[in-house]
Length: 359
Image 1 (spheres, rainbow, N blue to C red):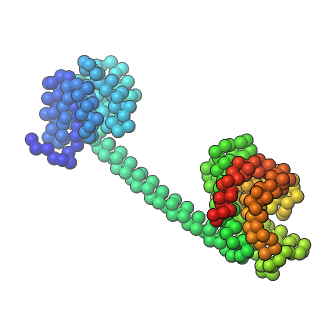
Image 2 (cartoon, rainbow, N blue to C red):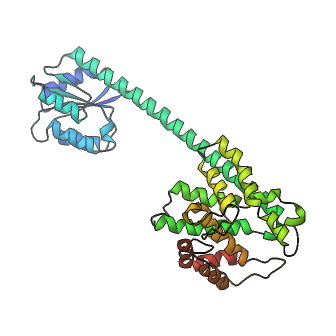
Image 3 (cartoon, rainbow, N blue to C red):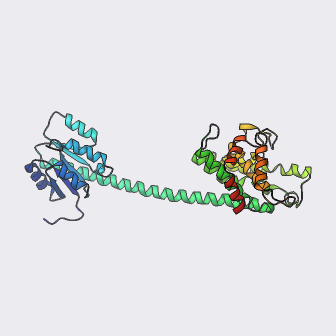
């Protein structure tokens, strides 16, 4: 009989040739039946050829049906093929054990043609539904991944645009945002690779800090040009105005945080915006926070922000050599800066120097 390529493949395994012939005669009009007299020969076939269903004798010499099922269940591909057990036992123990192991169904011998055909049809129909559902799930997961990629790209683009907007309001900073972001990335990577109590970061938290630090000076958008764009040093009164930019930054991000309370990136951006000028000893602004009361994200940003300010050109100063900037950071550890974050910087001086040189 000529077989159709789209017909389901049923593998029949039984050491009794009469049983095998019976299975073949019942199923061959609808399915492509592959008969095997032993578990070993069936397993060899299954490892190299596709199958849609297995009809398996439970008790066989050599490799038993029980042993073959164990091997099938251990294989990530073969375990997906539904198995109908054939057994001559009526005690029910073997059947129960087979079902617990993962068999889909069982039939008692002698074979009743109508029952066999009905059970095979049912299992193949269930398998088709299962595969259809899996394909739908895979398609939906792919669509979700695409949507997430788009959202992440949009989020990153928005953050970069906002950061660029704040950077343009203070043109003397040049590529300050880019360098500060890279310094923060170095510190965050160290904290994630070498977790220390009080400085643990998840992957999501680390990502949020690196992206959110781009908005650390967003409050400068609200600064008057006469102060922000002044080419020389600020007067004490002007500096008091500049000191308000963390408050403005927090206010700008507050509404977004209220709308999206669980958005880690926005929460982190708000923390950094308002607290990156706080000092470890409580002498910073705008709230005089100290120690661990300052969000970890802001403590990281503070070191990166100051290091870049020290090593960058300003109208009122030349850039400090990187070693001088390192010395200032280490001297102020425990006063201005979190002492452990300063240690992290010390471990990565070459990385900081590379960023200062290349960006």
